[in-house]
Image (cartoon, rainbow, N blue to C red; front, side, top):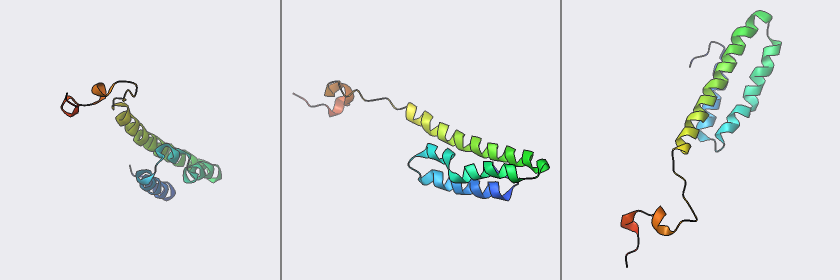
Amino acid sequence: MSYSHKKVADVAELLKKRFDSADNKSGILRSVELKALYEEIKLLKPEDRKSFGQEVNALKQELQSLIDNLQTKDDSIEPIDVTAPFDINTDKSKRPQL
């Protein structure tokens, strides 16, 4: 997504790069840069607040959708039953033969 406000566009680029390399992906939503954008809304002229706030919210929703996409990929993986005997968790071709 492209942003018309330069500060929002710069923070979006920074956070997307950080998202790719981050271990804790959901921590991006609590980043200092994103919070600073929300704080900056108070300092803007009343006529500029609406468009700036909409872009900041759009950025947050975009980051949230990236996180949600990762979680759905993780949910599709079947859990391993650690209490089950080895033959249930192992492929039939890899099971030991008598």
